[in-house]
Amino acid sequence: MRRLMLLSLLAAPLSAQTYEITHTYNVGGDGGWDYVIPDAPNHRLFIGRQNRVMVVDMNDGHLIAAVTGINGAHGVALALGTGHGFATSGNDSSVVMFDLKTYKTLSRIPAAEDADAIIYDPSSGRVFSFNGDANSTTVIDPKKGTLIANVALGGKPEYGQSARNGKIYVNLVDSSQIVELDAKSLIVARRWSTEGCKNPVSMAIDTRRQRLFSGCRSGVMAVSDYKNGKVITTVPIGRGVDGAGYDPVKRDVYASNVDGTLTVIHQDSPDSYHVVESVQTAQGARNMGLDPASHRIYLVAAKFGPTPDSTAANPRRRPPVIPGSFFVLVVEPIASH
Image (spheres, rainbow, N blue to C red):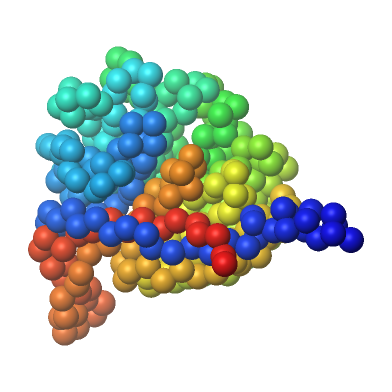
């Protein structure tokens, strides 16, 4: 009996974790923000901030540098083996290539309208930007910094993930679908509906169990079996999701939401999931990055002023960001007592 009790206690920690904010780093700087991209081996966060990408130290939150000359900053892709980073410049339909040591701009590569999210695929050694209004992906050679092709996706892409096996998966927000793109032939091989989920935006991946996690603006996370191309379940999350992550050691899935919550979902099995908790973060903390080595989750937000009165021309006014109030939150799993 004592041995059974000991085995039970040893098996408990994965499900007996809670999460809390452990650090708040005041970074400052004006303007809105978008994707948070961790470079865990080098302890850096890359954060899109309108006309620049801020490079922030993951350990203490100090500003290391800024990649400038960007017009509508959204996402960042890191091709570490080439020494090059790539930042989407959405307002002028381009991608900026920069040096990962000096943070200097090296070149500007033509993309397509509304260049937004961007990822690096290690299997093909290519960079893929997802261009929302153009309904396409721009494929880039990260060594040369040259355009390879623009590929039509048949819908408006949001975030995507590399399966590291030659396949790229992308959410189509307008048609509530996922597309599978062959990273070498650049052919859309198949697509499937995110049934039970409307407007999929964020995406995380579990390559071991071949699962995709699509954060949906309809208030759920859709879990897809990408080997068979189908949604297997949906799980409730917070309102206004824009970020997602998956920790392969803890087997926890995360959704960061504009309502100031981080939804934590545990993977009981490849086809079974349950919500562990909803961590209170900060209003507007909709973007996140995960360091799977430390299990730290990095979220960004700011303080807001009063919401302006609505007008006929602009009935959904947003509260203004208070200048200099931008900050990074660190959320970590803490063993329960």
